Length: 278
Image (cartoon, rainbow, N blue to C red; front, top):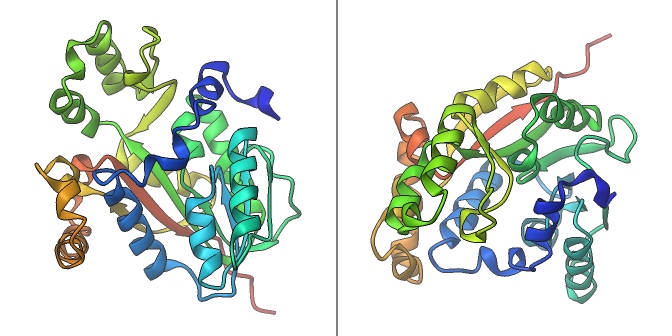
């Protein structure tokens, strides 16, 4: 199963940084906001959820703790082991954690009530591969089931790289120019501060991909919006009252199309077709 990943991507995730990434105070807005979206859109527990590309299990374990029946798949062996270990130690374990490729899911048709695609689309640079991931997700879902999928936004990265001083790195401007033009991010420098091979979506392209797979798009939402670029956002999110203010503002703004391009990540919420009545 590891052969399905480009070696540079596997090498990047084998560094083991993903397990603690969302615990970083500044990055926690991604987790808090995604969780907020999931809470409002997922069917009630104990619905069955397939977390495709679920990494070390941050979202899967949080959902399992609230009563969902969650199965995790990921193409990185380290992630599957980390998720398994965490599940074994959790009061509410996962239904399962296994190696899996979003383009070839090891599940029967119409098995799950909901699916998460909160990572695989980042690293599928070929549109045919992304379409296959979408159609496979739709295949394993029951009629009327929900998909919550995330894409990395093409336009936010320019400001993130500027704010972080990354445009001074060798090859950074060429890399940025390339993915702004085509969406494809190729880090030829090998400097991991410029991430790894990836695909950055135009926000509306993400919705179009869902529709092309036969899904009905219910919402297209910014995750962080401009909040991650606020000076001191990490400290702000240590205060529960300020955190709720940030989330409340993002809820108020999430329906504004102009906010999509300011967000590091964009989420599409979609559903499969309902069964025809006899």
